[in-house]
Length: 81
Image (cartoon, rainbow, N blue to C red; front, side):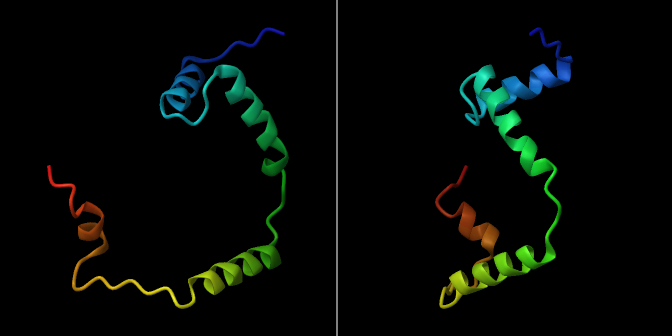
C-alpha cells in the first residue's frame, strides 16, 4: 500500500516522534488506527457523570496547602531562570 501525506501530516508525525509520543512512523500509524473506534463512540452523559463522581471520590481528603502561593508560583518554585 502506498500512502501519500501532506507536508502538515508529515510534520505532525515527526513532531509526535520528537515529543516521544511514538518512536516510529509505524507506531504512529498503529496508534492512529487503534484510536478509530474511540472516534466513532457516542457521548454518554451517564458515563460522564459516573467518571466525574469517581474523580470527586478520589479527591476526597486531598488538601493543597498553598500557604498564600498561587498554583503558578508553586509550579515554578525551584525553577528560577
